[in-house]
Length: 584
Image 1: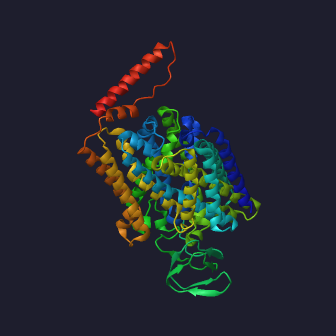
Image 2: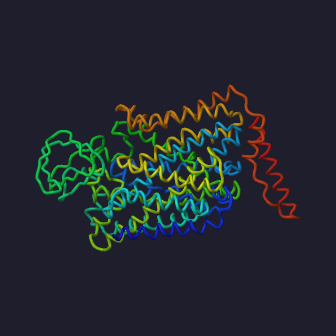
C-alpha cells in the first residue's frame, strides 16, 4: 500500500506541471520544441531524465541478475553515444532549424518521400522503446502491491498522455528535469542504505559470486512469464495450495502465473538459454547473448547498437531542437554526459545484490523487478517498506519521463510529418498513440525491457545514424541514396527482430546476429546510402545546406564593439573556407 501511495505524488506532480504548460501552448513550435528557449542546464537535466528509462533504472540491474556482469556494457554504450552525438550531431542538428528528424530529412534533401519514410521509422522506434516503459510500470506496481498488471500500464499511459496533451514540450521539459533529480536521489540513497545494512556474509558473496545451486531458504517462485526449466535431478516442490510433487529430470515449461514452492536445500533448476546464476559464465565481463558462446561478438553487437543508436533516437534529437542555438545544443550534450555518468555508477550495486538477495527472480522471469524487490529482503519492517516505496516512485518517474519524450515524437510523426495539422490534431494524436502503446504493452509481459529498448536503439542506429552522419558531413548525399539507405537499414533491423521473435531458432554466432543485428545492419545502411549517392548527383542547393549546418548562427552583436565584430568575422570566414573546401 505504501508503494502505491509513493507513486501518487509523482503522477500528480506530472499532471500539475502539464497544466502549467497550457498557457504557453499557442503554436506547433510551442508544442514540439518549446519555442527553442530551453537553457543548456535545464535541457541537459531534461535529456537525462528522458534518457534514463525503465531500461536504465531497472533493466540494467535486471539484466545483470539474468545474464551476468557483462550487462554493465549496456550503460557504457548508452553514455558513449552522447560523446559521438556531441562531436557529430548536436550543433548541426539545431542549426538545421528542423522541428523533428523527418523535418531535417526533408530540409536537407527536399524529399517528401524521405520525410514520410523517416516518420515511419520514428513510429517503429517509438513502439520498441515506449512499450517497455508501460510494461515495466505494470510489472513493478504488481510486484510491490499485488495489483493486476494492467493497472500500472493504464496509470502510466493515462498520466503521460494527459500531461503531454495539455502542456506539450514545455511541460515535458520541466517534468523530465524534475524527475531526473528525483530519480538520481531515489536511486542513490537506497543503494547506500542497502550496502550499509546487509551483513558481511552478503557483501562477501556479492563481491565473490558463487553459483546459485541450492535454495538457502524456503522459496516461493511465481512465474511472471512462460519459462522453460532444465531440471538436472528429481526436485521436490509444493504447489501454492500445499500439495507436494516431484519434478523429474528433463525440461519442464512453467506457465505464466504458475507458482512453485521450493524447500530449503532443494537443487536449483537451470533456465533454458541462460547461464547458471553466479557461475563462471555469469561472472565473465562480456555479454554472452542467447548463451551462444561468442561473448566478444555479443558485446560488440550491444555496443554498436547502443552507441550509434543514441545518435539516432528521435526523442533525444528533438531535445536539441529546443536549444536557442547550436552552441547551446553542444553544451547540453556535454553536461548530459556528466549527469549520466553519475547515475550509471549505481546499477551495478543493485545487480550484484539482486543475485545474492533475490535469486528466485532468475527463475521467475521477473528480473526487471529486482531493484524494487531487494529492500524487503534486507529489512522486513518499515525501513524496507519505505525504501521499496522510494524505489517504486523513482521507477515510475523513469517510466513517465521517458514516455513523455517518446510519445511526443510519435505524435509529431503522425500529426506533423505524415498528416500535418495544428495543435488539436497533435493532441488527438497523443491520446490515440498512447492508447495503441498501452494495448501493445498489455501483450508484452514476456519480453525484457532491456531487450526491447536495445532493439529500438538498433533500428535507430541502422536508419537515422547513417542519415544524420552523412547528411551533416557529406555534401554528395542524394535523396535517392538517403531513401535507399534508410529503407535498407529499416528492413534489415526490423526483419531480424521479427525473426528473433517469431522465426526459427538459430545457434552460435548466427543467433547473435539475428537477435542483435547492428554489426551488419548499420554497415549495410551506410554502404547503401554511400553507393547510391555516389552514382547520383547531389542537389544544387547542397552547398547552402551544408553551410547552414556548419556555420554559427547570426548571434546578436553589441553596437560599437569593433573587436568582438572583427573576431566574429575572422571566425566565420575561417569556418566558411573550411566548409567550402569540404564541399569541393
